[in-house]
Image (tube, rainbow, N blue to C red; front, side, top):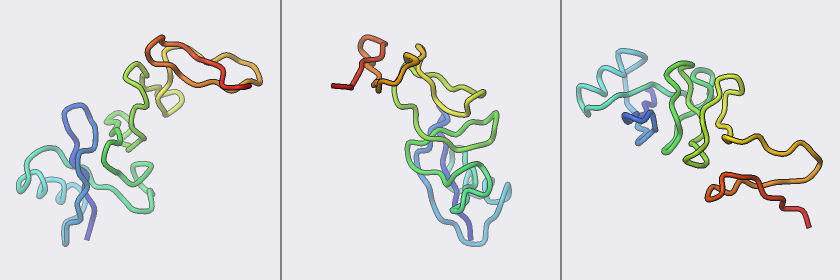
Length: 111
């Protein structure tokens, strides 16, 4: 019994299902034949493919991993960091900042 994630053309997880008696690539083929689309097996303990897939997560085909969804449309995937990064680095000081998508900049949240 295994879990499989349906991946759309943008590599986003659209659905996760539980399938009895199907495993690995054979299970991925079975899901594709029976439900259409592209499927990847996912593991509850995250021992393979980094973490258990869930709706809205990003599947990275280069690293074969499930990652958290892109937090903002402007952010890009960094293979160096293994995560999404802003197009502008945050200021390097002891203040806390939040990303403002409309202005593509960081804003201090300290009072």
